[in-house]
Image (cartoon, rainbow, N blue to C red; front, side):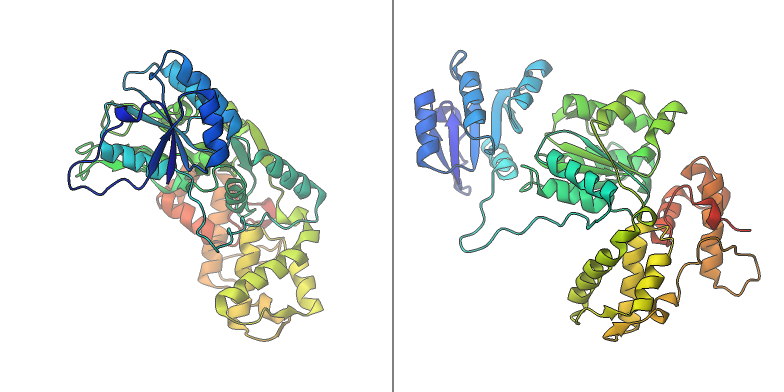
Length: 447
């Protein structure tokens, strides 16, 4: 690995005797002319900038470096008590990581490994980015155009829409099309854990911070450093954690649970919510300042029932993917099967459609699937009511009851209390159901 150094190589720590030798070569550049010559002659995977090696010269060279090689990851060496305002300025100048003096060789090695640009092995073609969602619908095409334009910017993106509309798929596609694509894409599902566990999962914790904290642990913010942090269902983030997320967005700073030491992280935030966050702000459940920090670029994914022209092309894509997983040829659909699929309400959106196709392909391994392959075990049609004693499965009754309770409850917390289960269990049940939507459409309520 080639490391371009703006600074003095003699100020870097040496490896301990007998330790693994460095896997990099440091090449210094102490002037603008030397910087441009180095960049013209060789490829670098990382730039290391020692900010205080010469009065004023390093920050001027840093600006030139970022303009000349905007894709090159940059790590800056700063004093441990450096002012927050200067750190913010460094982030704005393109610095992705920090080394705080004094630091040792192993800390430097770990920082290099985390931030260096990884080149593909010779002879291997780079993997194509994840596909964007298939659509012939004008509203959805506008969504995809917005995402394509915003992907390579550092802007925070808020994806809104019902469960199953493809927010996670879209978030991964955004990351893959960004300059952070070689770095981690890390997902945090906000409703799945209680407040204490969610805080630890996000920010990590120090040894002894709580019962069972037997060692220091780094959270998902640290794991996503240099990459993208995807906050799924951010509307369910507990009120006590919202200021901490706001601080991460504003200052790029956080503290692990149980310690006061401030850490920094260079993460791009993509958030998703099936709640109306604006309404949550108005009723006091969500901080207004956090909402505006998340809502820099807002994208709303329309539900599948509003884009029926997309069902046929989506069916083709999903059946091809399913066939690759089973090792069989992708089945064709009879005209009556496609008509059946196009008439369904799909309250669970793309997730429900995919599950329906997968079930039919597995249980009916025929070259052509007709409507009977899909009607088995399908969700009740739109407008149907279910009563105790109807000739339906126990699972169908349970799902209908959960739908009704959620539809009449102001929050997932209250719905879980009424049902006598905890919120994380309800969240998982809702994800597995055909219609994982909050609130559920009135037509689906139990009569």
